[in-house]
Image 1 (cartoon, rainbow, N blue to C red):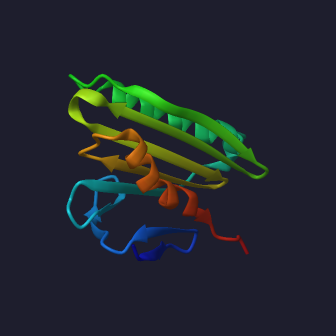
Image 2 (tube, helix red, strand yellow):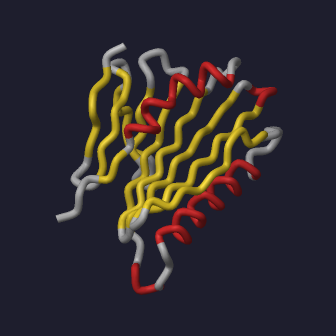
Length: 152
């Protein structure tokens, strides 16, 4: 399957060739969707105030916690965490959560990359997830390709 690169002046990521940008949410997130509409991705690119003294790790954890709270607010969904990890990469911090609601066949995997003052959060949605392993294999190249551009 072919891929293409999406980018901003601060980050870049590869997507499958059939994915298209559908629009933006009221919160300014970019929304992309697969050609068949069964998968989607929200991208939030924001700047945090460094004067608070919070580290990249603390900021990434804050975004992670907010995402988990949002899952908890979805009525009638019982979420199971398939992954919940935090990584420290020097000046950058990464938080990854992978949650699935088996009864609805709905999976959301979120990656937060904080390199202050910038934070990029991508949230991948598999709306018809009947096979967790297959879904993980599908999204893995996209998750791995997310990179922060070198700061000048």
